[in-house]
Length: 308
Image (cartoon, rainbow, N blue to C red; front, side, top):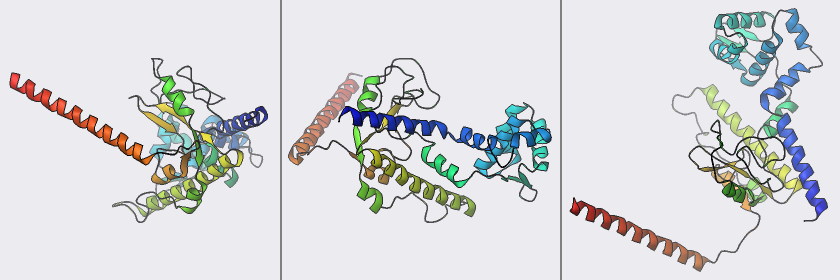
């Protein structure tokens, strides 16, 4: 690859990372309400004696959840006052100011202001880190991610530490080039389990919610794959350790450890022809080695038992 093409891909990778940074769910929705041109929510909240930060967080949570119980919202927004009763009183004031609705029969808060469809589409596509169109940056410390912008951790969730972990292995995994099998992605239907009928005891509303979640995932996964193929014939996936040292591929829409469909649509970009005879010999040798090890373990256990 010439330098010009490499620079173009690096520039595109940086733009993808900026889109991801911009489309973190809560900050993006909060910015939509805060910068809304049709309604000045900040002034409106001040006018009704509602703290702006509380009001914006309420709008964000209602846009996300659509419906929520009193207990749920108090749990989410409690930190604004550190007092459950004050929080409940402020939720009442917000309802009276029409920031959200209250259904007395269902005992639920109902969303009143939603985000636009174009914003929702951006969130669906870019709220999760995308595969990289250039080889990830070499990991040299535990706070690296492989991406060009920002930092994180090579350890999943909130388990970060600065103890020694094998960064070399992650770097090797990150350097593997993949490609999308477009025929499989387009011709083979993705499936999730238990979408043909409600589970035992499942409410119809929850069943429909699972179906909508699948349809959204299926649509956005194909959009992300098309985006990757538009700019390059191959891509890279980043990897992280969990707290037990197991390696997990990082990717929501494209992942080699996902459903059978997820695995089927991803292929190695650098393919090798496998000799079936040699592969069979290797399996047989591995099997024989395993049997020998098993025999040694049984013999050792028997000798220890006799000695005892």
